Length: 251
Image (cartoon, rainbow, N blue to C red; front, side):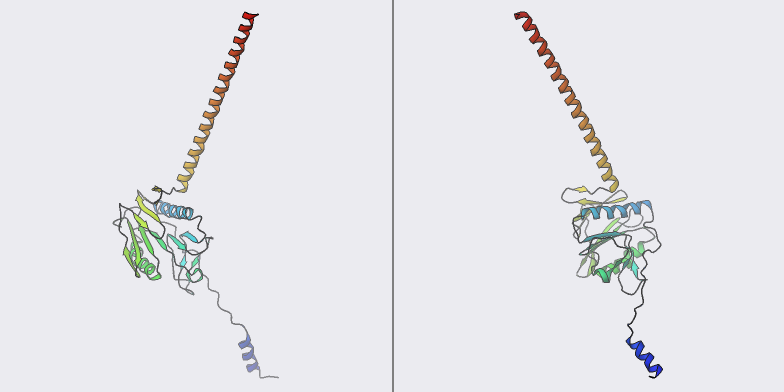
């Protein structure tokens, strides 16, 4: 019988190594936004950017998703309010793992507040710069501290440089869109039309208005057709009466 300790060591050496399973949480337990204004901007940006890039199979937009950027470190993550990634599939995800996706976001939005300002203008900005995120935008919907309330940074030779405001707005080179504050909202404008992309509520309201206009137009067309039919019927009746009178006169 072989020596037991040697046999056990040989057996263990031939067993496949089992890597420990690392759990990456899907939530940080914090709310999407601090106030209704913050939430409205976040949901608006996610919706309109997803709609704008709906025909691009390799452009992905997410909001309030845990973004892990160091493999094997489940406590090291950020939760960007909104981010856009190019070069990855559009399907929905639970979390975003940089080492699996192999693509950093091209744009990140932080809808900032007085309580998050130090992280937004300091730690996050430095990290996003280090990771190579091309554009970083900060928007303060309540105009609490950020002056101006919309600020943008673009990566130039590895460092963030302020994007100059033009007529109170930014043009995002990565998105091909214009960003402009409007009240508590940050509106996304299509440069080809010059119009703001509508929110889901605005789009639904326009659809309802269009449906109502179409209904009224149909009613008007039907009424016009009825009037024309009635006029034609009356003309036919009069012609018949005149024809009858002529027959009587010549009979």
